[in-house]
Image (cartoon, rainbow, N blue to C red; front, side, top):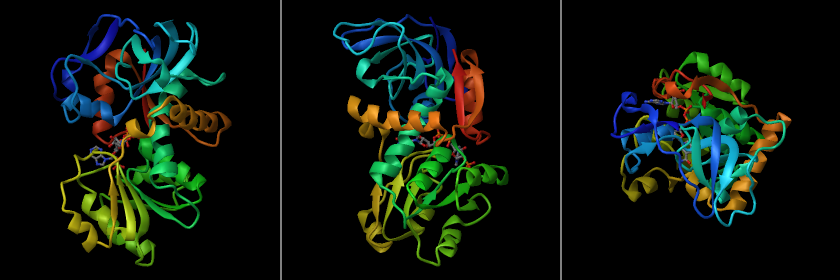
Length: 322
Ligand code: NDP
């Protein structure tokens, strides 16, 4: 089968579009004929080796397609079912082997492209706003990279939960999108000191929670944006990993909390996936949640999708058609 894989770590040029053996589904697994694959920042971490993977490695941890066959013991799925998944590698390929418990059925009326675009970033925004720091009316949240794939969904879900949202974006052109998603205030953090601006916007109080997907470059400013006993949810490394720190720093900054969550631990069972993905796909279908698919690419051009994502040129989701 055709697939995009790596034999070594490095820049986007290390991606190989070539032939790989079609996987065989083992017990409890399904073989999916992939129609669309979501591109996520995590794919770049796998590519550069920030997150460890065994080589050769077929990229992509999010996809949608049709069940081609099932392994022993799989009772919940049958060939022909339309399914989607996140957090299982191998989606940049014509076929992927996925544990059946990770697969959700795609509701009628939703395309493969939409399902592949919604799963990973949608479930992420869901767990961050509903579980890691459950937002409620009266809370103020600072959301970085608010016009990104995850950011646009996070802003919308934070508003659904009744919170006030301050969003940061890297360029003025992105501000409009974050506002349309519901952000109450926007800071262009490449031009303004976002911590000072956040303090100004909150009458010097600070925010209850910062959802920080940027990591290294925003770490200190995020801590400085929080009210005493506030929560820093640092969940990504778009600018590089957040630095190591002493717990005493949290005392000095106001008895703060820091957590570094992963979707893997918040979509850990079939029930949890069904619940989160069920909400996300339902909200997309009913129009409560708007998905912005910014760019699509043929599988052979996966490397270009990585270059675009890493250059901060994109807003919303990138999808590969297979
Ligand atoms: P995005 O679409 O948000 O793209 C990344 C954005 O980060 C850019 O558009 C840019 O927006 C911003 N950014 C800031 N600094 C940099 C930099 N130095 N280089 C590149 N981008 C930068 O990507 P995703 O939605 O796929 O992922 C966003 C983040 O969320 C990633 O860090 C990812 O790892 C993380 N994530 C974590 C999950 C988890 O469970 N822990 C799950 C899903 C995603 P701007 O120009 O506006 O600053």
